[in-house]
Length: 407
Ligand SMILES: *Cc1c(COP(=O)(O)O)cnc(C)c1O
Image (tube, rainbow, N blue to C red):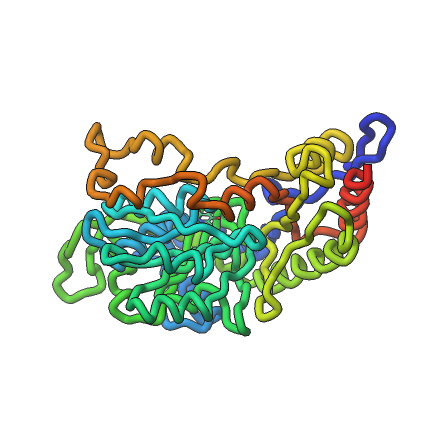
């Protein structure tokens, strides 16, 4: 619906929070009805979650895929699969969803934050290596906003130190590095089906691996460690019920069939935006390595506050007030380690566990250690990107930014 604000035409953009920017339709309705009519809504007995796991493994070309209840559950399951000792360290990034960090603490391990490249907002082999020590148990990389990390270099480093890599691919469905999907470079790949991701079941997650032993642990962790398909099943270790229901599985099967087109449409919308915004003073369009394909969960600009008054925050305010375009300057506002959970170490009762086991320098979150993280957050303007964008939407976004940036 078009509307007028101070005599200017405002175009309402498709939103991933409702039907305007989601691909939910007859394919999902038919499947979910069939799940309901079958009367079997648990994945332990039904067929839809199994179908989803089979289809997802096939699409990504991996041996094993398991569905679970959220992206957070996927990350938790992956960490539980590599099974750190209490106080072991997992290297990760401070620019990510909190759901990628709290599972580390739940497993008794310590997040060791690596800095990021402020141009891509991603961790690199160079920022990870100084974080490695005798307590390191694994590395989580996040392909932020859909842009792949340099997995060639990161996997080489991880191999040299004999460390497993978990790829948080929640924002990067079907993104590729060197022609290979992200999520398949490391030992385990994690995905989210939350409302705002490329495809959705409202809440939901997926984990993938090619490693048989890890696959067994992933499956068990999602299922209270009950080997319910074994001849004499038992509860083998501490684990949760992170299952996806058949209702979500049915919706996910419909969504998955649309995923390749969704990613292509987003890439084409992003390419058009980049072409229009290229060379605009004070604005840098998304940078991706020529060996990567970016999945454009979001379309992120770097805004130079020396050239654009108020920087990313100022530009976002004007975009909202004058053009009705919603964007997020600073993405998660502040690095994760500045949140109360890390600052006050609020965990289990008053124990502060597992922070009590940490090496002091793992808890040193001082500014000098994270120049890329702080610069990255200062400059980033996260704009939405959607498969439903028409050329009119793209022209509208581009000319809004151009007009405001030139002011
Ligand atoms: C969304 C997201 C998560 C968490 O997924 P949920 O399904 O919301 O629990 C984890 N990591 C990243 C990078 C995300 O974008």
